[in-house]
Length: 602
Image (cartoon, helix red, strand yellow):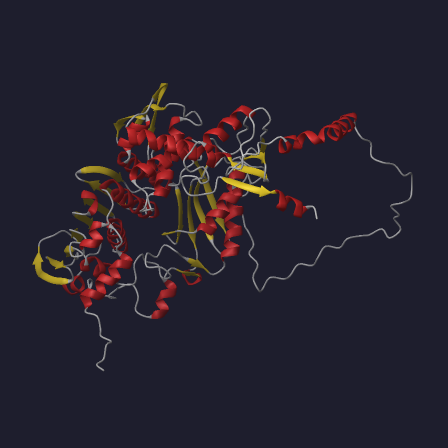
């Protein structure tokens, strides 16, 4: 039998690696911008055509490369960042694996012009699908200019699965933001189809955040600064009263590298406990400095998932740091930090002494049964309440005895006898023949609105409610591109939106009957919900918009409902085609059977 194991050709191996590193045009932007930062560039320009499908060009004034380096940079695992395996534990640069340029060159047409300051001429390298076509001297300024054309031209299946232009440019903007926030000392610009999206001058972190998210964020920023022996934490957090109900202004960095860390996000949210509006998400731009040997950034191809040596202690330090910052601005009860520049949070280590338990003095002669025996006094209100409760307790169960005997999926209750109750202003409870029915009021309303909005989109009809005072707002560029992507569907639902400038919109009208929140809040929630539904390939555009719109317009948890409101929601829910589940597939109804109730009393 012949041997069947063969070495893959470099071109095929590079395409496989590209599948991990280069997922979409935004991945190319990230890798090229990080290379420019590592090269010491102080002016970095990003030029995009057709959302990166036609052209991605990144120009910097960094160190540049020699002719040999320019050619070797496209080889797999060729890097100037590390030389030994031990160097992986002291990474201070963005890239280090030496696979990015090889992966890009495997799936695109790449042109590199680069020159070092000490060289009179530069070098031009042209590579198509891992094949070097040109390597000649050229005239160019100091630094490097990478042009990536026709991404995935040799992998039609991958190119076919790229999303719309608005979706792809939104991902590019997101990657751009992560890098420019981490490097406020560098000038960046971003152009798309000859339109300038960003032109950010070098400055401090606050100026960079304002440049990225607009002037209105300046008044919301609270300074964050903590020094410990384990980690240094600096940056800004947002005031709770201005927190939005969408993601997009939450950034963690470690050693100036963007990272995703849900565990640390929970620490920030915990610090805001009980002071945030309902379903709001705090803004934060948090920079951590730690010993490179105490973190592992090599656990994921994108290098955004990072493992810390002592995450539990950092979690506690982070939460305390955010609480302290909020306390400085009298947002939460706090000690007087006026005379303290920094807070020193000790971290336990093996060298710390274990504290002794406190000593408690006990009076061994005390007799709790000595003295006059007396019962606590009872108020007249409590006695009257108990008498009424004893006399009328059977009324709570009267609905169970008077139900209709019609054996449907959920036995409906007669109009005159049915009663509804609310638990924590979140669940509606209704007695049915088989036990107790619990209804999630927000999900129920989402289901009702979803089917209504879907009908409007299918029939191209909706009623718009014109607001007396139009609302003008500046959106994050990423959110603005989402809005442009679904603008046609929003008009069919009843939104009237006017574009008033760069990322600025004016909301003149909204869908009739959507009074649960302000038009801007509704739009923010809609955009956030749409982001979350985009990943589901089985859902069409209309279904995604209808689901997002339902989530934005539904009643919130915590809202008290009257008997008539609960009855109306009950009736409209069971008139839906699929009352059991929300548009996102979560359960709306749960039945606690009499058998389960009986078991609890055995």
